[in-house]
View 1: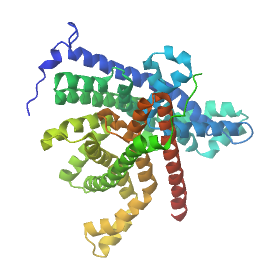
View 2: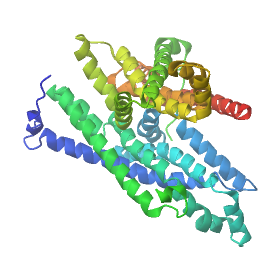
View 3: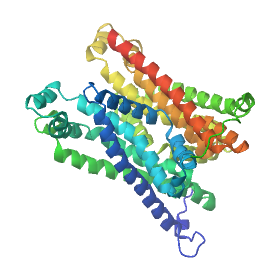
View 4: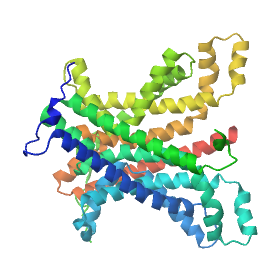
Length: 239
Length: 222
């Protein structure tokens, strides 16, 4: 098979943009969607995950139920369908959202989908702590909020970094579904450039390489963070 | 609030648009599950064989598949398979092949964890009885690995079922497509997408409840 890369420098038809320019801007969109959605996912996921570990007494019981329902809702609908819900269904039921750019809707869709998975990891992280930690907080006279703030969460977040790393890498891969609502990201670029140039193999190779490179960078950055903040005295810190 | 109008729903619509897509989604899930578990188990055994020339290609395959977005994999296969076989194949067949080899990478990681969860003594006992590597794998290790990993394998299958909606990228007629076509025909796209979400939710939620029960059951026996 003969590969031909020259078309990347060719103009896409508007007289100033080349396919290479287009691909780089598409990469930018992929990064933007993934990064913004990651912020949403991390924020909401941490809150929901924490809620699910609250002691099940009194009003907090409802918070736990709410957290569980949240996770079930966003985990049991395919991401692509959720993106369609945000793009087609919700704006038509709630008109003000029609003014919102589709980028924001995709970020919300991908962010909420991922928040359920982050919540699951955060919950598991908090529950993996020995019960004595919570009790120690209570014995010191801390309120529930203080126990979480000063005892449980600082430990839990450091424990869940490895699973969160794979979620961060997943969100980059998952951002590819944004093609379905015409966000000009890498996958949509791949589909359109393939059609226009008929050099599918070259286009897909370039796009796939960018995806893998991005995932690798995220992996390295997270590994660095993990190393920085690991908990002294644990198995992980001796490596 | 715009009003929803579900009056277009009737039995004819279900039989004309939805059944076909639903059947394909289920078919795709089942074939990819069975094929993926078989192929994935082979990959896992290759990686754990201790022979570099077997372990390395398997590891490379699994890691590559796992680092590319599924949509891109679907596009790749749709582009390359006709090129390899010399004639165009339909989006549906292409999807079946893609999902089988793609899911194998994910199932293989599960099976690898499963095989590693079986204690060393079990394998040694097999060798002490004079079983070969293949026999001890087949008769002792794999049945236990499979059983230990059953809930995880099913959970992966639920994810697989959700992921089948991504064949949207190559225009295969799956369950989501069925809803979309129905919505377009009756000019009710909003209701159609909403219904699709409800149906997916009901299916996946029920399946995951079953898996949770299974997990609890297995946990008691062990």
